[in-house]
Image (cartoon, rainbow, N blue to C red; front, side, top):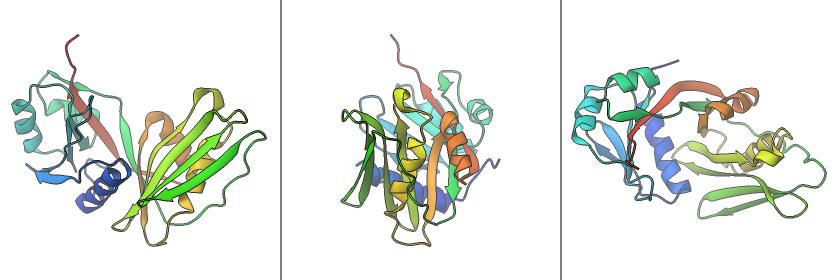
Length: 213
C-alpha cells in the first residue's frame, strides 16, 4: 500500500466529507488540511497526504486532547513521527472505486428502504418491520468525487446484505459517471467494500492525545 496518496484526491474527498457532515471546509495549514470540527470529542483534525517533518513539528506544539492528526500511511510510521503522548487509533483505509451503478439488491423479508436527497446530501436508511433502524449511510457528489460516508449496520441486522444494499442505493444518486468514488473504511468495513469492487489506495492512520480521566 502507498505511504502517500494524490493530494488533490485527498482534498476533494475531505471537502465532500465536510459537506456530508455539515462541517467547515478544510483549510491549508502547515502542510496539512485542517478541519475545525468543533465537536465535543473532536475539536479539529489535521490531514496529511503522507509522512512529513511538518507532522513532528505540529505534534510537538499540541498538548490538548480531542485534536487528531491523520496521515495516509502506516500507523507505525505515523507513530514514529510524533511524541509518546500521542496514541495510535484503530487503522482505517482510504479506498476508491471506478464509477458505475449497481442494481439495488432485494432486501430480506421484513425490511424497507428509504432514500432521500437534500442540500446535496443523499441519505439511505433500511428499517426493520418494527421501524427499528437496521442500516444507514450518506453520500455526496462534489468536485469530481462521489463520497460514501458513515455506512453502518446495527449488530442485530448484520450478515444480511444490508450494507451492500445501502451502498447500491446511495450510488443511484451519482449524477456524473466520471466522478471518482471514495470512502474511508474501518478494518471491518474494508472486507465488505473489497467484495463490492473497492480498492485500497492507502492506510489511513490516526493519532490523538487521550484525555485524562
